[in-house]
Image (tube, rainbow, N blue to C red):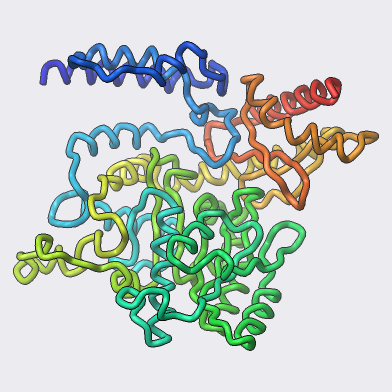
Length: 480
């Protein structure tokens, strides 16, 4: 243990220096080719290395080449800077190294608590047992849609777990063009088929149209199909748009559809009083998927699925082999009556995710988290103002949460040439190293999207981003 103690101290010092110095370096830089080849070609060691040497190797060969998401001028995708409290808790969780499938140990009970905390933060009703931590929203979506499928099959008199999808008529779900790809993946993996996901029209800002949803459901039902699911977004990845959740909830109630909300990135926006009204109806969903490893800054990986009915969730996934029977169930009902977490999802051996969630939330409290969320949304609106004030730039969608979508669009340049510049612009900005932004396609046009979920971002960082976009675009335009 002496070697571990010394190496541990060295590792903490190394990581503290790394985190403390992020803002002073480039946001991202391409790896040195020699360093890349060195990592790619590492031979399997014949003999072991000391812990102190491993720490030095990490410092020399790994930490100098980050993704960039810890930097306050990283505005790419939806990747958070890690909360220091979560970093420390990750080390402690790894030291314990339990399987959080179930049983009577700290991680299991702590997960019950942090899932309840997440539900409270998001304003979602939470009966005990109606949720669990997952690797991310992709897995949470599979769990939620699997539960919806099970309920729909049961209503048709089919035990889909026993009989399979062949015993069912096609089940039809409803999404929009802005729905995250994880929903389609879940539909494919669950045997629902992506062609049975109907893309409902959206308005100009990318919101799913509730009137069109109702019309499509009724038309499909009249054609003999079996509508069962509607998916709404509480913050789309492209623009941060929040669907009209209350109106969609009304349609789902009328048409007896499972109402699922994808809140992976944006659900915690409800904590900002300025934008909280956009989330009306979130509490009426049958299931909600979200990612503490996004806006909360919990170190990857950590998603969460919340459902309204714990028995629906458990009924869809519970399978207890003889070697995992809880022999203490009758004598210790206080911890076992909800069963194991492995009865509520796909994973059997599950990592100790709850400690880093607990530490991250506890370090800030509700007030601190709400303050950080509100700061990010305010900075996104300010970025929108800076874009609107720049004659060469234009906003391509309203700023609803903490994503600002815009493009390079000076007067007097052909549409084809502008598309070419905007298509290459994100990479050009990234390679300059002073800011990081990513590209997307909105309404058929190339655009940039800046996602602000790092509470360390300041207005001067926004000014750098705008200046870098303008400079990189001018270079691309001049180069033809």
